[in-house]
Image 1 (cartoon, rainbow, N blue to C red):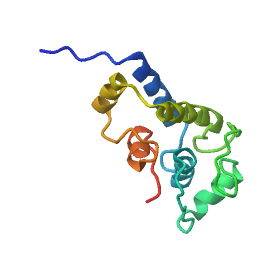
Image 2 (cartoon, one colour):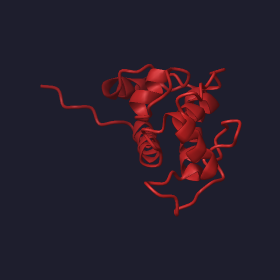
Image 3 (cartoon, one colour):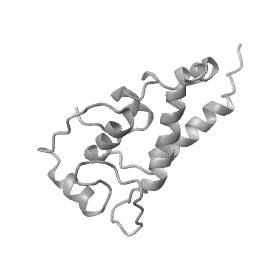
Image 4 (tube, rainbow, N blue to C red):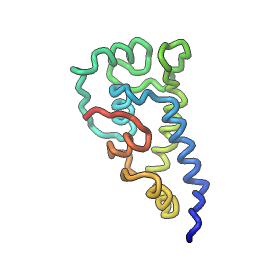
Length: 139
């Protein structure tokens, strides 16, 4: 019987940042998550605000997003009700992962990634964001 592979240090660092992102994001705030996805995937995504009036008002009022829906990564306020998002920490970890993805993952890393995740290792793939980061993204 084969022993399970011990994940590489690179993969463990990746998972560390994934967990930071999961811990510092609002999984159910589709507007903020879609704005993050649009920003980091560099996709030309049209965000339909028709169904997100409350989320838009919340995100603008508390400073998570600018009115043009760009994420505000300078923002961190622990006084926000209902589980605040630390945009500074969230932005730093997302940037580290996206920079790593842009460089390209080595084959050894990808073997571990494929053991844990089904979504393609692609920053432009909505499934990646939903599965890996547990973020609900606008359809």
